Length: 116
Image 1: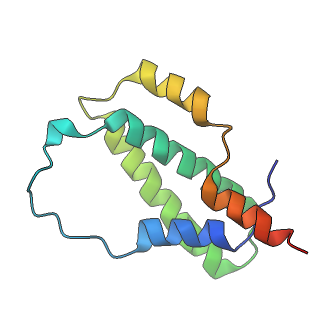
Image 2: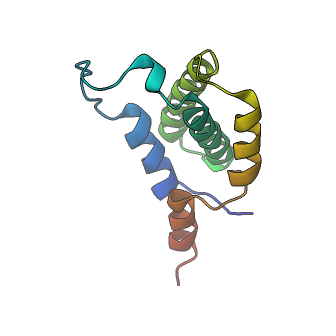
């Protein structure tokens, strides 16, 4: 099991969920072309990682930022479940496949913490 800390893992989520978002101008994206199942799995993995970071953080400001990111990720995950392109069976297979794979941002945090 990886040991998480305040470094890269936390910064990754803050940039992803609190960063400046581009303005959607319509364009090429169609509502029905959204990969709801894949995005659902992505947000589920983010929720798992954020919960692990919340268990080890002691700084109040850091926990506050992570709680905000967790709330956003859960909201996005719930939206994708309601999408017409969402497939429950495929989501379960994908989650089982990728759940234990190392994620790059958490791997980097682990390496930096134990660097001699």
